[in-house]
Image 1 (spheres, helix red, strand yellow):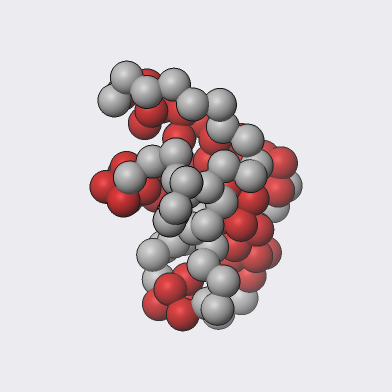
Image 2 (cartoon, rainbow, N blue to C red):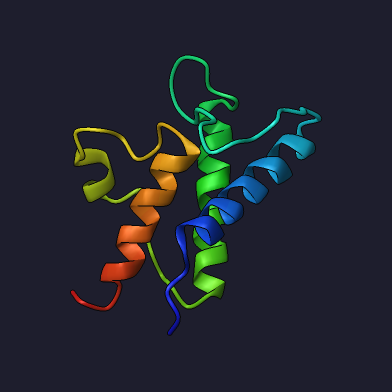
Length: 101
């Protein structure tokens, strides 16, 4: 199984965010630094839930059954949901470790 690059993961995340924003008739430029959670976020909490589900589904279609809302994600000192880049970093590590458990 080929490991996705961080750039590929970022693209998956950005596309899911754009799809969500289009569905609610919002138009925001999405970058690696786009805030996903907290003050200045481009999306609300329900939007983030929808986006996370879409990302998990996309990853599953690529043969990675990764749960992004795991205890591991929420117990991290720095939330992986702060920005596109942080989420991509978290997913990249999860994919690298996939199947090693």
